[in-house]
Length: 388
Image (cartoon, rainbow, N blue to C red; front, side, top):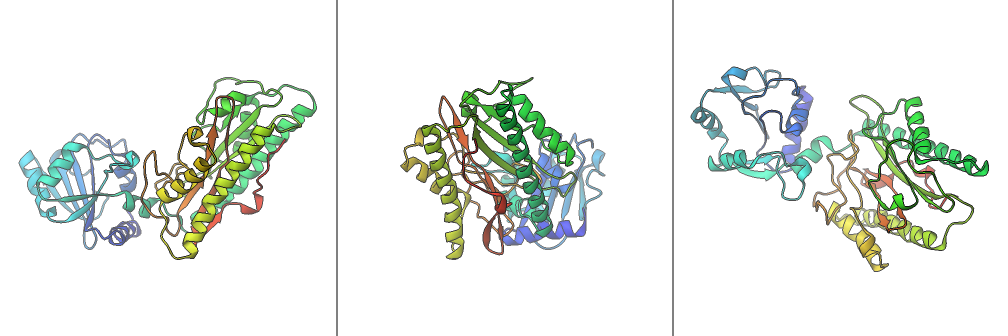
């Protein structure tokens, strides 16, 4: 661990008004602890270890004698244990303090701490608080270099989705069949050409498949038919440890006429998406803090008022950083309610969706907070119309 990484961890602890951040693992079950501390998944981890980082001062390492070197690369003093009693004795000096821990009642993505270890920590007098805010501050906020990397990825994705739709248009004009797999192939080819990486192939869903937010297929997928709604969802980043994802969803119709129902639903969806952005901008301008749950509740309320309550299948958005579904605040008040605040450097998607049996629509933009204002990624490339 570099000195600046330890400093960033301790700064996050102080900003969250905690006494420290507790990391622990056993058989690498907590990938969050391993990832933050830089511990290889190949290292032997057959005994529990603990790494306690205080808000000020030197961290403490608690390791078993047969794996005493497991945390050797990390700064701090080492306490070696052999028995259960000596393990507890090594932990006792951590009592009577408030520790951020990897647990959460509502955010399972960070809740790695097992119940037994949590009980032990509490039994010896440690007060455990969810580390969700710490994780966001340490991993989920973009610095200027991260924002620049995110913007480059966003610009590339908007170029790529345009290229893919041009292929759809050409096939339609030439009266040639095009499949979901053909479109995905164009997207992936452009990823490869631009040296972008992704954790999963893009979503391409035509017709009734567009009503499934996580639709996937093998082989060529379905052939597009006249009048089909075509949903594209693509996410990628530059390679390397500093690559930051962008994630956009685009929708079109195969044909020369957009069905009235599709046009109406799309207009309502865009209105809700823009309403979410305006809510954030208005609250920030007034100096009021904004949580992810508030953004989702506002967006969901707009769509519910328009009669779409039964057609909503997912949250409004998710945090974005080196992972597409990142460590920052999610726009969520229903699935995994997220009370964390949007902070300087927060990056997230706004992607409301409306889904019916016959078709579905999702429109997704990315937003980040810069100098106290929400900024739409690649904003000059945005337009809110259905492409035919």
